[in-house]
Amino acid sequence: MRQFNNPLSATLAGLADQLRRRRGGAMLDDGERLDGRTCLVTGANSGLGKAIAIQLAARGARVIMACRSGIPEAGEDVRRLSGSGAVEMMHVDLTDFDSVRGLCDQLRDRKVRLDVAVLNAGVMPRRSRRTRHGFELMFQVNYLAGVLLTRRLLQDNVIPNRTFAGDGGVGGGDATAPRSRIIFVSSEAHRTAKPIDLGALGAYVEYGVVTGMAQYAHTKLAICTYATELARRLRDDRGVDVAVHALCPGPVDTNMAREAPLWLKPALKLVMGAFFSAPEVAARPVVYLACARALESESGRYLHMTEQKEASASACDAVAGRGLWEASERLLRRAHAIDSAG
Image (cartoon, rainbow, N blue to C red; front, side, top):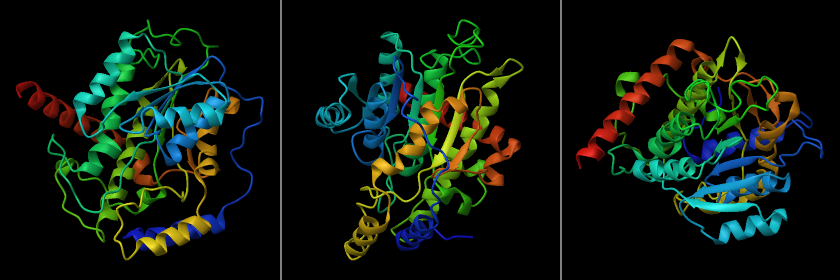
């Protein structure tokens, strides 16, 4: 099994991925477009998220960039580089559940219909930090805030569906209507994570630069497990209600390692710049999952770069998925109760 134990071993594993990269796989033709559709991308102010926003907009989508920073400069860049004026930015801070709820309230009240939601935002801090809700920062930003966001978008019918919004959900009654799609950006690091301990889920974890990769892998396993469970729940005897996919974009030359130790940054920058994919290349499988006509009636895909494969056995386990779903709901209820009391 490949190792993701620290930034150096993770970088070397990414380099090996890049050397093994296969040509072909998940590809789009120029005619596969998103004209008239609306896409939300979290963490779209830089790196991979920004590249995803540019390519979705270039294919005709109206793009909502949900970000904590970079407003309005990142949006102006996406408009210029995509040649599209249908781009807007909305503020959200995933370290604050009130901010996530606020974004959802705005989308609901504006009667926005999302055809694609890309859960891309992620962090990899140098050391553990506690959010105002008491969770470890990486766990909340990479995983739990995305659960809250997805749940609210479904319950409010912002992502049209019948499963959580009832039969009034647009797309729930028309078998020919294009299904909305939810895409989770995960990582092959999920395969190296220990099985999720539901009793300890959300417990604050101390880590530093050497041990942080284990927590990163844990959050990515949680994402894959949740995505697989959500795909199960959004399918019934009438077929796919909303499509749910996940992927590892492979090694990407972004600023995710910005908190690496000073002594390690030069080596990481050299390797990443020379051998890792540029964000615009890594964005392509995400955009494929967002608009490929071949996936119109499918759900539950997992891509590693452009290659389709199965997520880990742990991520695909139905018992683990149901347990994670229920435990995550409890954590969110507890956090909301504390916020309400405060």
